[in-house]
Amino acid sequence: MLSLDIEAKTGDLTLKICTDIPEGVSAIFGPSGCGKTTLLHAIAGLIPCQGSIRFHQHVWQQQQSRLPVHKRQVGYVFQDDRLFPHLSVLENLRYGYVRAQKKQLDMRLNLDDVISRFDLAPLLQRSPTTLSGGESRRVSIARALCAQPQLLLLDEPLTGLDHQRKTEILPYLAAITRDLSIPTLYVSHINDEIAHLCAHTLVMADGKLVDQGDTAKVLGRLWQSSAASQQNLGESGSLLEAQVIGFDQGTAMVTLQLGGQSLNIISPTKPATAQLRLFLAASDVAIALEKPRQLSIRNALAGVISDIRPLDGAQFGLVAVDIHLDSSDLDNQNHGTPTDKQRIVSHISAAACQDLKLGPGTPIFALIKSARIASPAG
Image 1 (cartoon, rainbow, N blue to C red):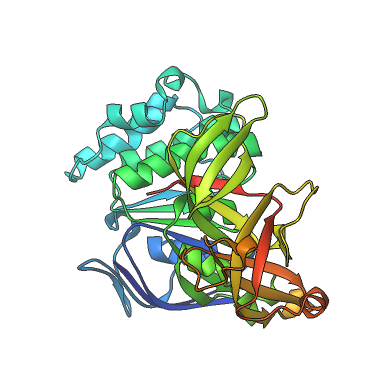
Image 2 (cartoon, rainbow, N blue to C red):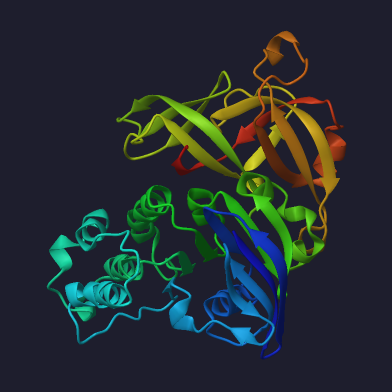
Protein backbone atom coordinates (compact mmCIF):
# COMPACT_ATOMS: atom_id res chain seq x y z
CA MET A 1 0.00 0.00 0.00
CA LEU A 2 1.11 3.54 -0.81
CA SER A 3 0.09 6.10 1.83
CA LEU A 4 0.17 9.79 0.92
CA ASP A 5 -0.39 12.95 2.95
CA ILE A 6 1.38 15.58 0.89
CA GLU A 7 1.19 19.15 -0.31
CA ALA A 8 3.21 20.68 -3.12
CA LYS A 9 3.05 23.86 -5.20
CA THR A 10 4.13 24.17 -8.82
CA GLY A 11 3.28 27.40 -10.66
CA ASP A 12 -0.38 28.23 -10.06
CA LEU A 13 -1.25 24.67 -8.95
CA THR A 14 -1.38 23.61 -5.33
CA LEU A 15 -1.38 19.83 -4.95
CA LYS A 16 -2.95 18.51 -1.76
CA ILE A 17 -3.51 14.74 -1.54
CA CYS A 18 -4.23 12.55 1.48
CA THR A 19 -5.12 8.95 0.67
CA ASP A 20 -4.11 5.28 0.72
CA ILE A 21 -3.64 3.60 -2.65
CA PRO A 22 -4.08 -0.21 -2.68
CA GLU A 23 -1.96 -2.86 -4.39
CA GLY A 24 -2.47 -3.59 -8.07
CA VAL A 25 -2.89 -1.14 -10.94
CA SER A 26 -4.45 2.19 -10.02
CA ALA A 27 -5.41 4.93 -12.44
CA ILE A 28 -4.82 8.60 -11.75
CA PHE A 29 -7.47 10.25 -13.87
CA GLY A 30 -8.39 13.83 -14.61
CA PRO A 31 -8.19 16.69 -17.12
CA SER A 32 -4.94 18.24 -18.29
CA GLY A 33 -3.40 20.51 -15.67
CA CYS A 34 -5.16 18.94 -12.67
CA GLY A 35 -1.90 17.74 -11.06
CA LYS A 36 -1.54 14.13 -12.20
CA THR A 37 2.09 14.45 -13.31
CA THR A 38 2.91 16.62 -10.30
CA LEU A 39 1.64 13.85 -8.04
CA LEU A 40 3.88 11.26 -9.73
CA HIS A 41 6.87 13.59 -9.47
CA ALA A 42 6.23 14.03 -5.73
CA ILE A 43 5.95 10.26 -5.18
CA ALA A 44 9.18 9.65 -7.10
CA GLY A 45 10.98 12.42 -5.18
CA LEU A 46 11.57 14.54 -8.29
CA ILE A 47 10.02 17.67 -6.73
CA PRO A 48 9.97 18.88 -3.12
CA CYS A 49 6.76 18.51 -1.16
CA GLN A 50 5.56 18.73 2.41
CA GLY A 51 4.06 15.86 4.42
CA SER A 52 4.60 12.12 4.39
CA ILE A 53 4.96 9.31 1.85
CA ARG A 54 5.02 5.67 2.94
CA PHE A 55 5.37 2.66 0.67
CA HIS A 56 4.63 -0.58 2.49
CA GLN A 57 6.82 -0.47 5.61
CA HIS A 58 9.27 2.04 4.11
CA VAL A 59 9.12 5.76 4.93
CA TRP A 60 10.06 7.72 1.80
CA GLN A 61 9.29 11.09 3.32
CA GLN A 62 8.41 12.39 6.75
CA GLN A 63 8.36 16.16 7.22
CA GLN A 64 11.84 17.39 6.22
CA SER A 65 13.39 13.92 5.99
CA ARG A 66 13.30 12.69 2.36
CA LEU A 67 14.62 9.48 0.88
CA PRO A 68 16.71 10.29 -2.23
CA VAL A 69 15.22 9.49 -5.64
CA HIS A 70 17.70 6.70 -6.41
CA LYS A 71 16.80 4.85 -3.21
CA ARG A 72 13.04 4.75 -3.79
CA GLN A 73 13.31 1.94 -6.36
CA VAL A 74 10.69 3.47 -8.63
CA GLY A 75 10.35 2.75 -12.33
CA TYR A 76 9.17 5.89 -14.15
CA VAL A 77 7.94 6.10 -17.75
CA PHE A 78 7.56 9.75 -18.77
CA GLN A 79 5.17 11.19 -21.33
CA ASP A 80 8.02 11.95 -23.71
CA ASP A 81 10.55 9.38 -24.88
CA ARG A 82 13.75 9.46 -22.84
CA LEU A 83 15.70 6.59 -24.34
CA PHE A 84 19.45 7.23 -24.74
CA PRO A 85 19.86 7.97 -28.47
CA HIS A 86 23.56 7.01 -28.48
CA LEU A 87 22.78 3.48 -27.21
CA SER A 88 21.09 0.61 -29.00
CA VAL A 89 17.79 -0.77 -27.72
CA LEU A 90 19.65 -3.64 -26.02
CA GLU A 91 22.12 -1.21 -24.41
CA ASN A 92 19.22 0.91 -23.15
CA LEU A 93 17.68 -2.17 -21.52
CA ARG A 94 21.00 -3.28 -20.03
CA TYR A 95 21.59 0.17 -18.56
CA GLY A 96 18.83 -0.20 -15.97
CA TYR A 97 19.47 -3.91 -15.48
CA VAL A 98 23.19 -3.51 -14.73
CA ARG A 99 22.54 -0.61 -12.36
CA ALA A 100 20.10 -2.82 -10.44
CA GLN A 101 22.71 -5.59 -10.23
CA LYS A 102 25.34 -3.16 -8.90
CA LYS A 103 22.89 -2.00 -6.22
CA GLN A 104 22.41 -5.67 -5.29
CA LEU A 105 18.66 -5.39 -5.68
CA ASP A 106 16.39 -8.41 -5.70
CA MET A 107 16.52 -9.33 -9.42
CA ARG A 108 12.91 -10.45 -9.84
CA LEU A 109 12.79 -9.72 -13.57
CA ASN A 110 15.15 -11.45 -15.95
CA LEU A 111 16.40 -9.39 -18.89
CA ASP A 112 15.54 -12.10 -21.42
CA ASP A 113 12.06 -12.46 -19.95
CA VAL A 114 11.37 -8.74 -20.29
CA ILE A 115 12.62 -8.81 -23.89
CA SER A 116 10.34 -11.76 -24.63
CA ARG A 117 7.27 -10.27 -22.94
CA PHE A 118 7.52 -7.05 -24.96
CA ASP A 119 8.51 -8.80 -28.20
CA LEU A 120 11.70 -6.75 -28.46
CA ALA A 121 14.10 -9.32 -29.95
CA PRO A 122 13.81 -7.90 -33.51
CA LEU A 123 14.61 -4.40 -32.21
CA LEU A 124 17.62 -5.04 -29.98
CA GLN A 125 20.34 -3.82 -32.35
CA ARG A 126 18.44 -0.80 -33.59
CA SER A 127 18.96 2.82 -32.55
CA PRO A 128 16.07 4.49 -30.64
CA THR A 129 15.99 7.15 -33.37
CA THR A 130 14.79 4.52 -35.88
CA LEU A 131 11.89 3.23 -33.78
CA SER A 132 8.23 3.96 -34.39
CA GLY A 133 6.22 5.61 -31.63
CA GLY A 134 4.73 2.32 -30.50
CA GLU A 135 8.10 0.54 -30.54
CA SER A 136 9.71 3.35 -28.56
CA ARG A 137 7.02 3.19 -25.86
CA ARG A 138 7.44 -0.57 -25.52
CA VAL A 139 11.18 -0.15 -25.06
CA SER A 140 10.68 2.67 -22.53
CA ILE A 141 8.37 0.55 -20.39
CA ALA A 142 10.66 -2.48 -20.69
CA ARG A 143 13.69 -0.41 -19.62
CA ALA A 144 11.81 0.82 -16.54
CA LEU A 145 11.03 -2.79 -15.61
CA CYS A 146 14.64 -3.90 -16.11
CA ALA A 147 15.60 -1.57 -13.24
CA GLN A 148 13.67 -3.95 -10.91
CA PRO A 149 11.19 -1.37 -9.55
CA GLN A 150 9.08 -1.93 -6.47
CA LEU A 151 6.63 0.68 -7.80
CA LEU A 152 5.92 1.49 -11.46
CA LEU A 153 4.80 5.00 -12.45
CA LEU A 154 3.38 5.37 -15.98
CA ASP A 155 2.71 8.96 -17.00
CA GLU A 156 0.37 8.80 -20.01
CA PRO A 157 2.65 6.26 -21.72
CA LEU A 158 0.35 6.06 -24.77
CA THR A 159 -0.04 9.81 -25.34
CA GLY A 160 0.32 10.89 -28.95
CA LEU A 161 -0.23 7.41 -30.37
CA ASP A 162 -3.03 6.65 -32.80
CA HIS A 163 -5.69 4.05 -32.07
CA GLN A 164 -3.83 1.30 -33.94
CA ARG A 165 -0.61 1.83 -31.95
CA LYS A 166 -2.52 1.93 -28.67
CA THR A 167 -4.26 -1.31 -29.59
CA GLU A 168 -0.85 -2.91 -30.13
CA ILE A 169 0.65 -1.75 -26.81
CA LEU A 170 -2.28 -2.17 -24.40
CA PRO A 171 -2.03 -5.99 -24.35
CA TYR A 172 1.64 -5.72 -23.32
CA LEU A 173 0.76 -3.37 -20.48
CA ALA A 174 -2.19 -5.51 -19.39
CA ALA A 175 -0.07 -8.68 -19.31
CA ILE A 176 2.90 -7.16 -17.52
CA THR A 177 0.88 -5.45 -14.79
CA ARG A 178 -1.30 -8.54 -14.29
CA ASP A 179 1.43 -11.19 -14.28
CA LEU A 180 4.31 -9.48 -12.47
CA SER A 181 2.31 -8.04 -9.55
CA ILE A 182 4.23 -4.77 -9.49
CA PRO A 183 2.14 -1.97 -7.90
CA THR A 184 1.48 0.51 -10.68
CA LEU A 185 0.12 4.05 -10.96
CA TYR A 186 -1.18 4.78 -14.46
CA VAL A 187 -1.84 8.41 -15.35
CA SER A 188 -4.41 9.05 -18.07
CA HIS A 189 -7.36 11.22 -19.01
CA ILE A 190 -8.76 8.58 -21.38
CA ASN A 191 -11.48 6.30 -20.00
CA ASP A 192 -10.81 3.38 -22.36
CA GLU A 193 -7.22 2.98 -21.18
CA ILE A 194 -8.30 3.02 -17.56
CA ALA A 195 -11.08 0.51 -18.17
CA HIS A 196 -8.58 -1.79 -19.89
CA LEU A 197 -5.87 -1.79 -17.23
CA CYS A 198 -6.93 -0.46 -13.86
CA ALA A 199 -8.92 -2.07 -11.07
CA HIS A 200 -8.76 1.07 -8.89
CA THR A 201 -9.16 4.71 -9.95
CA LEU A 202 -8.38 8.07 -8.37
CA VAL A 203 -10.05 11.12 -9.89
CA MET A 204 -8.30 14.49 -9.59
CA ALA A 205 -9.42 18.06 -10.23
CA ASP A 206 -7.55 21.29 -9.37
CA GLY A 207 -4.81 19.45 -7.48
CA LYS A 208 -7.23 17.59 -5.21
CA LEU A 209 -8.72 14.11 -5.02
CA VAL A 210 -12.44 14.27 -5.85
CA ASP A 211 -13.23 10.54 -6.03
CA GLN A 212 -11.58 7.18 -5.51
CA GLY A 213 -12.57 3.53 -5.66
CA ASP A 214 -13.30 0.53 -7.85
CA THR A 215 -12.88 1.57 -11.49
CA ALA A 216 -16.27 0.26 -12.60
CA LYS A 217 -18.02 2.28 -9.90
CA VAL A 218 -15.93 5.43 -10.36
CA LEU A 219 -16.46 5.59 -14.14
CA GLY A 220 -20.18 5.22 -13.58
CA ARG A 221 -20.41 8.16 -11.18
CA LEU A 222 -18.04 10.73 -12.69
CA TRP A 223 -21.01 13.00 -13.22
CA GLN A 224 -21.77 13.06 -9.48
CA SER A 225 -18.77 15.27 -8.69
CA SER A 226 -19.51 18.93 -9.36
CA ALA A 227 -15.79 19.64 -9.59
CA ALA A 228 -15.43 16.84 -12.10
CA SER A 229 -18.39 17.81 -14.25
CA GLN A 230 -17.33 21.44 -14.41
CA GLN A 231 -13.95 20.38 -15.76
CA ASN A 232 -15.41 17.91 -18.27
CA LEU A 233 -13.48 14.87 -17.07
CA GLY A 234 -14.65 12.79 -19.99
CA GLU A 235 -17.07 9.98 -20.55
CA SER A 236 -18.93 8.48 -17.66
CA GLY A 237 -19.74 4.91 -18.43
CA SER A 238 -20.19 1.34 -17.34
CA LEU A 239 -17.96 -1.72 -17.18
CA LEU A 240 -19.76 -4.99 -17.89
CA GLU A 241 -18.58 -8.59 -17.68
CA ALA A 242 -19.59 -10.55 -20.78
CA GLN A 243 -19.09 -14.01 -22.26
CA VAL A 244 -18.27 -14.61 -25.93
CA ILE A 245 -20.81 -17.01 -27.43
CA GLY A 246 -20.33 -16.43 -31.16
CA PHE A 247 -18.34 -14.74 -33.93
CA ASP A 248 -19.32 -14.08 -37.54
CA GLN A 249 -16.20 -13.32 -39.56
CA GLY A 250 -18.22 -12.22 -42.58
CA THR A 251 -19.91 -9.37 -40.70
CA ALA A 252 -17.10 -8.90 -38.13
CA MET A 253 -19.74 -9.35 -35.43
CA VAL A 254 -19.09 -10.80 -31.97
CA THR A 255 -22.07 -12.07 -30.00
CA LEU A 256 -21.80 -11.74 -26.24
CA GLN A 257 -23.97 -12.86 -23.35
CA LEU A 258 -24.81 -10.61 -20.41
CA GLY A 259 -26.86 -12.36 -17.74
CA GLY A 260 -29.10 -14.20 -20.18
CA GLN A 261 -29.25 -11.38 -22.74
CA SER A 262 -27.24 -11.02 -25.93
CA LEU A 263 -25.16 -8.09 -27.12
CA ASN A 264 -23.50 -7.70 -30.53
CA ILE A 265 -20.33 -5.69 -31.07
CA ILE A 266 -18.11 -5.19 -34.09
CA SER A 267 -14.61 -6.67 -33.96
CA PRO A 268 -12.33 -7.52 -36.90
CA THR A 269 -11.15 -10.67 -35.10
CA LYS A 270 -12.58 -13.10 -32.63
CA PRO A 271 -11.62 -12.14 -29.05
CA ALA A 272 -8.77 -14.20 -27.65
CA THR A 273 -10.61 -14.99 -24.41
CA ALA A 274 -14.12 -16.24 -23.69
CA GLN A 275 -14.66 -13.68 -20.92
CA LEU A 276 -14.49 -9.97 -21.71
CA ARG A 277 -14.91 -6.66 -19.97
CA LEU A 278 -16.79 -4.00 -21.94
CA PHE A 279 -16.87 -0.22 -21.58
CA LEU A 280 -20.18 1.49 -22.45
CA ALA A 281 -20.09 5.28 -22.54
CA ALA A 282 -23.16 6.76 -20.86
CA SER A 283 -23.72 9.02 -23.86
CA ASP A 284 -23.95 5.94 -26.09
CA VAL A 285 -26.91 4.45 -24.20
CA ALA A 286 -30.44 5.54 -25.22
CA ILE A 287 -33.68 4.49 -23.51
CA ALA A 288 -36.94 3.12 -24.89
CA LEU A 289 -40.11 1.99 -23.12
CA GLU A 290 -40.71 -0.75 -25.68
CA LYS A 291 -38.32 -3.00 -27.56
CA PRO A 292 -37.79 -1.21 -30.90
CA ARG A 293 -38.14 -2.79 -34.32
CA GLN A 294 -36.57 -1.87 -37.66
CA LEU A 295 -33.84 0.23 -36.09
CA SER A 296 -30.15 0.44 -36.99
CA ILE A 297 -29.22 0.14 -33.30
CA ARG A 298 -29.05 -3.64 -32.88
CA ASN A 299 -28.66 -3.94 -29.12
CA ALA A 300 -31.60 -3.50 -26.76
CA LEU A 301 -31.03 -4.79 -23.23
CA ALA A 302 -33.95 -5.21 -20.85
CA GLY A 303 -33.55 -3.39 -17.55
CA VAL A 304 -35.17 -1.59 -14.66
CA ILE A 305 -34.36 1.98 -13.62
CA SER A 306 -32.95 2.19 -10.11
CA ASP A 307 -32.18 5.91 -9.84
CA ILE A 308 -32.30 9.19 -11.78
CA ARG A 309 -30.28 12.27 -10.90
CA PRO A 310 -29.71 15.59 -12.68
CA LEU A 311 -26.25 16.46 -13.96
CA ASP A 312 -24.73 19.87 -13.42
CA GLY A 313 -21.84 21.97 -14.59
CA ALA A 314 -21.02 21.50 -18.29
CA GLN A 315 -23.70 18.78 -18.53
CA PHE A 316 -26.59 20.79 -17.11
CA GLY A 317 -29.85 19.77 -18.83
CA LEU A 318 -28.96 16.07 -18.80
CA VAL A 319 -29.87 13.39 -16.28
CA ALA A 320 -27.98 10.23 -15.30
CA VAL A 321 -30.17 7.16 -15.34
CA ASP A 322 -28.96 4.11 -13.43
CA ILE A 323 -30.23 0.87 -14.95
CA HIS A 324 -30.02 -2.62 -13.51
CA LEU A 325 -30.02 -5.22 -16.24
CA ASP A 326 -33.00 -7.55 -15.92
CA SER A 327 -32.78 -11.02 -17.46
CA SER A 328 -36.49 -11.57 -16.93
CA ASP A 329 -38.77 -11.48 -19.98
CA LEU A 330 -40.01 -7.91 -20.19
CA ASP A 331 -42.15 -8.71 -23.24
CA ASN A 332 -44.25 -10.88 -20.94
CA GLN A 333 -44.53 -8.07 -18.36
CA ASN A 334 -42.39 -9.95 -15.86
CA HIS A 335 -41.03 -6.79 -14.24
CA GLY A 336 -39.81 -8.19 -10.96
CA THR A 337 -36.62 -7.46 -9.11
CA PRO A 338 -33.65 -7.40 -11.49
CA THR A 339 -31.89 -10.74 -11.49
CA ASP A 340 -28.64 -9.52 -13.02
CA LYS A 341 -26.24 -7.55 -10.81
CA GLN A 342 -24.70 -5.68 -13.72
CA ARG A 343 -25.54 -2.01 -14.08
CA ILE A 344 -25.60 0.48 -16.94
CA VAL A 345 -25.61 4.25 -16.68
CA SER A 346 -27.24 6.36 -19.40
CA HIS A 347 -27.12 10.12 -19.93
CA ILE A 348 -30.24 11.51 -21.60
CA SER A 349 -31.88 14.93 -21.69
CA ALA A 350 -34.06 15.95 -18.76
CA ALA A 351 -36.79 16.76 -21.28
CA ALA A 352 -36.74 13.21 -22.67
CA CYS A 353 -36.86 11.82 -19.14
CA GLN A 354 -39.98 13.87 -18.40
CA ASP A 355 -41.68 12.97 -21.70
CA LEU A 356 -41.12 9.24 -21.10
CA LYS A 357 -42.25 9.59 -17.46
CA LEU A 358 -39.20 7.67 -16.28
CA GLY A 359 -38.63 6.94 -12.61
CA PRO A 360 -37.19 4.32 -10.24
CA GLY A 361 -38.79 0.97 -10.96
CA THR A 362 -39.67 1.78 -14.58
CA PRO A 363 -38.98 -1.20 -16.90
CA ILE A 364 -37.09 -0.02 -19.99
CA PHE A 365 -34.85 -1.14 -22.82
CA ALA A 366 -31.33 0.25 -22.92
CA LEU A 367 -30.37 0.86 -26.55
CA ILE A 368 -26.61 0.41 -26.90
CA LYS A 369 -25.27 2.56 -29.73
CA SER A 370 -21.73 1.24 -29.33
CA ALA A 371 -19.65 -0.85 -26.93
CA ARG A 372 -15.90 -1.15 -26.71
CA ILE A 373 -13.92 -4.15 -25.50
CA ALA A 374 -11.97 -2.91 -22.48
CA SER A 375 -10.00 -6.05 -21.64
CA PRO A 376 -10.19 -9.77 -20.99
CA ALA A 377 -12.12 -10.28 -17.77
CA GLY A 378 -10.27 -11.46 -14.73
